[in-house]
Image 1 (cartoon, rainbow, N blue to C red):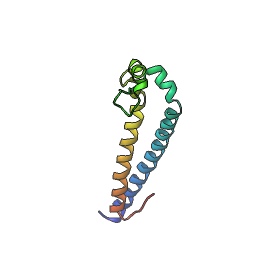
Image 2: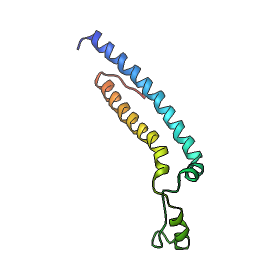
Image 3: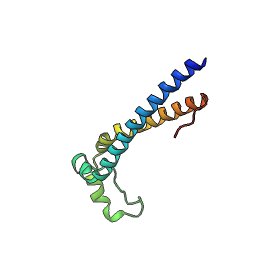
Image 4: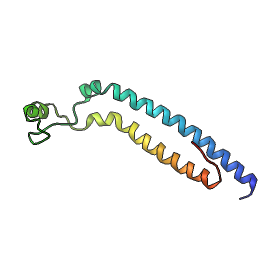
Amino acid sequence: MDDGERAIEIERLLSRLSELKARRSTLVSEAQDFAAMIHDIRAAFGNPYFYSGANQGRSEHADESVANYTGFSSHDVVAPTVLGLLRVDRELRKIREQLRGLGMTTT
């Protein structure tokens, strides 16, 4: 790869890095919003957890906990954001590695 090709590739990677950082920021904000609304989400979509009598000594609440258990439907609300963050972080690592290979350091 000559200097011109290297410069073009670095510019392309830096541009993609910038896009991914912006996307990551958006996803982190969404995740924080979901965290702030966790009680509302569980009220609308159900409780994905329950405690049995053997589970951490919470047997006094076991019947109520099982009665309110609705499976993982509340996870469906948050999962796209979490999976998006994982994909973005994976791509960010890959691009940073490529830039390091071209002699560039990033944050």
